[in-house]
Length: 121
Image (cartoon, rainbow, N blue to C red):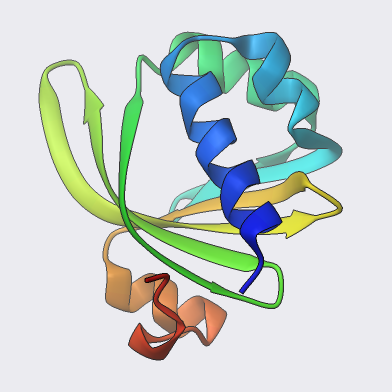
């Protein structure tokens, strides 16, 4: 387990939730990929636009980590609606290189080959 990867993902959440766009961008690689089941986009410009217009708050829960991949079970709140899902992050050299939202923890595990055994205690 890498404390650095976990710290990066938690700081990324804090920056997003605090609308601290400069920190969010600094924690992300220039070619960061952002996606979900509907598709994906790439780059800091895309991340900036998404972060400033989504109105999304992500509240992290359980975390799982293995070899640079961090899966976070979380609650997402937007426009007064809260859903539970999971987000898979790839972290390289203390920067988020990809963020992919999954409908469920099981879906994130399937996409990343992580499992309950990779839980952060």
